[in-house]
Length: 78
Image (cartoon, rainbow, N blue to C red; front, side, top):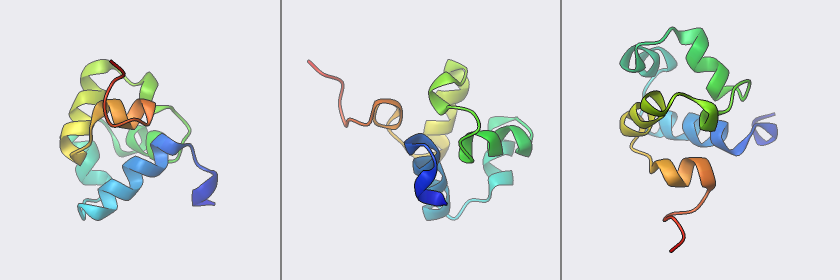
């Protein structure tokens, strides 16, 4: 089932697990409820459609490059 999730959802779940954080810990850091966070991680809502400031905070918490998370590339094209 995990392979069927959107790429963004897989990335944030895998990175959260790699950092040994719980969904609740990430939700608390984002100052949102756990159900809202789970919608992103379960692919019910797209991370790329998240409010800009919330998306940047998510990337900071999970130590992710925002461009890579949303567009799949390491750096923006020149």
